[in-house]
Amino acid sequence: MTRSAAPHGSSPSRRRALALVALGLAIPPLAGSLACSQVRYTESFAPEGVIERVVVRTDAGVVELSAGDQVRVRRAIRAPEAALDLSHRVEDGTLYLEAHCRRLLPCAVDTRVELPADLPVEVDLGTGEVWATGLTSLNLELDEGNADVDVAGDLSASIGSGRIRAHLSAGADARIGIGDGDIEVDVPEGSWSVQADTDRLKLVDITPVSDGVGHLDLTAPAGAVTVRGTAGVAAR
Image (cartoon, rainbow, N blue to C red; front, side, top):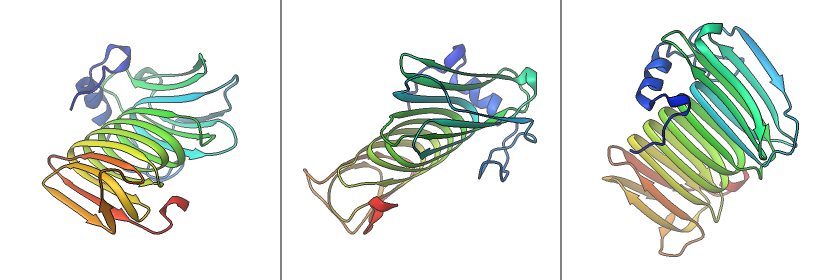
């Protein structure tokens, strides 16, 4: 699966090696955190200026996104000072939140962002988990890990290995590809346009048609794809 070049000149394989140094599970302050060490400190802020898009680029950790009335950020840093490049900036209406590992030292940052639902979001994560609720548009790239996302409009997700579960609203347009792992999609019951590249496709309470209420383009050559019609899924 082709991925765009990693920021700061680091290749995806190098970024993955840096991130995997301390892979493990933890609980709060952010649910499901990847922990390479104890939280060294946290920071919370509301960025200034007009924000029309949010971009999160992180080598390792948990990214949690939820709809709110304004943009607020909370980050839990799990890295020694010398191991991490941490930054944020607003440029041409885009908020960039970046956390990159410098060395083969324990390094992870958990990022929680609350933002208006109509703001498009882009996440580029090396190793970890992505949780999103109430978004309208999400573009996700994940080298290794799991994602559970709730998107009302456009969803584009590219995952190297792991698992993704997507909860979509009527009329959604989703393109999901995973190199090694499974895809699960929950949608409102009815007729959907479904294109699937997989040897294991399961459709539940879904009528595949060429021109449905939404479009699903799903690729999982080494895994299973399940599309499930669920009454009231749009209100999740």
